[in-house]
Image (cartoon, rainbow, N blue to C red; front, top):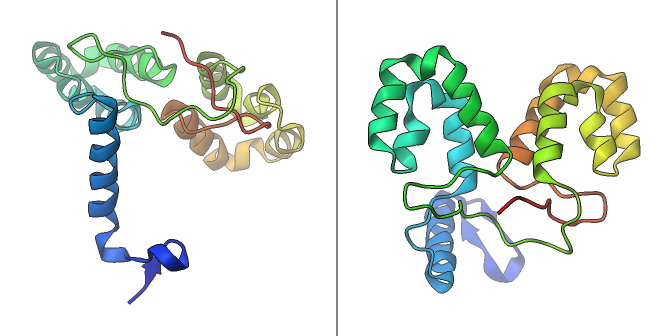
Length: 176
């Protein structure tokens, strides 16, 4: 049976989702955030199902979720606005709590908002990678037009879920 992880912590692959869910709940419980919603989940729901209001339902905004569902995401405009708000790290759940993110690494200096907007608008030109200090990757992304769009899409998702780091390994700074 295939295993994942270091030699001393081998977990059967078919148990990985369960282990990650348990780990996530344990981290939330330790931090007192058991009911807090995840930045990653909110962004992915907004990006792929936002026009149906699923992101708003997830965040606890039931009435807004129904309205967004009925209007097909406000004919796409509302869905796009929510996509950007979650992507820049500026969305809160219905209780006013910030969305749960992974623990910051290093000293965050570069802005998630700026990185997300650069990636979304001109990411295919590598501008987001230049901003984050990855000059070589920025040039490569520029030459390949964002890896024919695939690399650009991956970067938008990584920044939107809050997982992208700058060239020094620091997390991106997000607004409070």
